Length: 254
Ligand SMILES: [Zn+2]
Image (cartoon, rainbow, N blue to C red; front, side):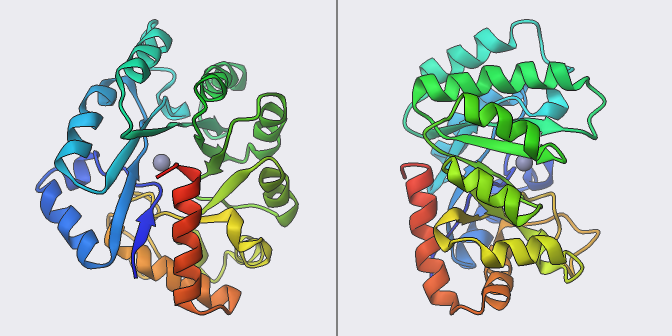
């Protein structure tokens, strides 16, 4: 059974001690593909080389809401230039999005998000989105500028919100949240959504799974998220794995 981790910050320091060894561990667990989202300017130039070094990895270019405040005045030009130079290993725009917990004013976050959303529309690329208590605002912009595809990563929310994203062709990233029994609303939502709307992710080293709190998350734990999903949807693991693989392939044209 082969799985794709559609959202893993594999370039972060948590994996710096020996990235190839961490990748081999993930591969040994059945993770054969992994998408590394871009989060800030300084990190963009290193992503192509990292993906050349680790077979089965792809990257995205974007500015995460947490890094908008520290971005240079030229970040937009730099993002466009990085996209111009990127080859087929760059599979999406992101990670972009909106976060109410971020101290930067929402209007400034929206400016950065909408710039990237328009870029995704122009380039025909899907968009990887971070949404923290900002689903409705994100939906408003997605209705205005609808990309070829996308994903709300680490989705947590209501069935109504999930359906609104899926109506716009936006997938839901299913991560460690569903391994916690207390996350009933999200678990019920994920159980009720069409299988074709879902993709798997770890968001490692963030979003630790239930039972692994306090430790950095790792892409090798992706199969545990699949198992939790099989439990809440009462569907066989193999059937889910096959469908989720084709969803990830369709989302990133990979
Ligand atoms: Zn992320």
